[in-house]
Image (cartoon, rainbow, N blue to C red; front, side):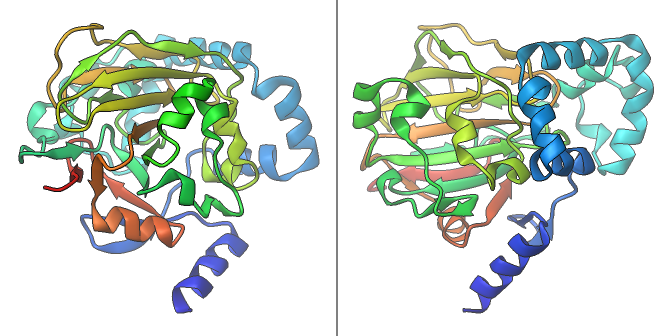
Amino acid sequence: MKQGRERDAELADGRIDYFDRYAGVVKTEKIYGEAYLRWAYETVPGRLMLAAVVKRAFFSRWYGWRMDKSSTRELIAPFIDQYDLDAGEFVDKVENFESFNAFFSRKLKPQARPIASGEGEVVFPADGRHLGFADVSEMERIYCKGQTLSLVDLLDDEDLASRYEKGSLVISRLCPVDYHRFHFSTAGKPGAWRLINGPLYSVSPIALRRNVGILTENKRVVTKLQTEDFGQVLILEIGATNVGSIHQTYAADSEVVKGEEKGYFSFGGSMTMQLFEAGRVKLDEDLVEHTQQGRELYARMGDRMGMKAGS
């Protein structure tokens, strides 16, 4: 009952709490652009502007063009300071980034994100705040009570949706402050990616608490990954406001190893999803536990998110 009251209080005051796996405590998220997001999604004038302009691809392309300009280099150091980023993890020195977008899609040193190497382990594909559902068909809510996802709408494919209707789902939400390259969560052979075009709403919980259906509307990419341990895994990358580009860097039909880079997002918040067939994966207890409480779990790319079922 206490956990339920705490969660209700969080929703009432609008804060976004998550559980930090490393610190072992609940933290409140520092939201990049919070005032604008609340205006856009929580006021009538904001929602009118959202429908007319902000969700449109041209708006994100324009913003991306701005973030590519060399003058945006002056934004990098204050951003690092404000959000306590560790510049020692970066492959490139801060002064060598040519624009804010170059910094945003930065690469990290391999030792900054070690890959869990245990047999039968599957890892988080990205830094971020994660939700894990052992059975998609039994989801009680996503981000807000009473809201669930339609796999048919999400995948734009009825046959594919039926294959995963009782499978497991992991949602990884990347904030603007996070490392924005995404990786393969297990070894396998990926096929060619498929684009499902759409608008570009924000994927912040501020937006998703109002309408989780945003995730079935936004521009997204679907990739099938054939694996030995987990069968066919579906990987999705979902764009958002100011993320006009989802870049794929992998080679289709080639063998990839666990933790290998798959691609990266340009500026903005964004999201990845992993769908597993029923009976293929056992998600880690802390991930499932906090998801059941309606709270995301913070973990970094390469850390374990589950095991092969039966291991």
